[in-house]
Image (cartoon, rainbow, N blue to C red; front, top):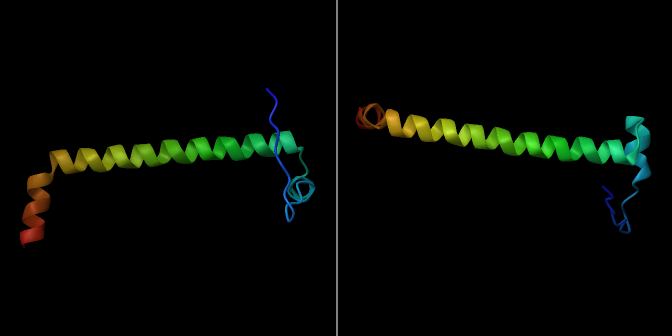
Length: 66
């Protein structure tokens, strides 16, 4: 797959790759992977909260009223 990244005025794409001692392709792959992991993590947290709200709603209401 080819990915074209436009370089605007202040962006210097070779600086991060030089600091990380990696290629632009590898760096973009890492960024994309971390974004996917972050999205999956947010989904898991949301699913956990939904579970708690469904199964412990009565308990949460009693705590709120106390």
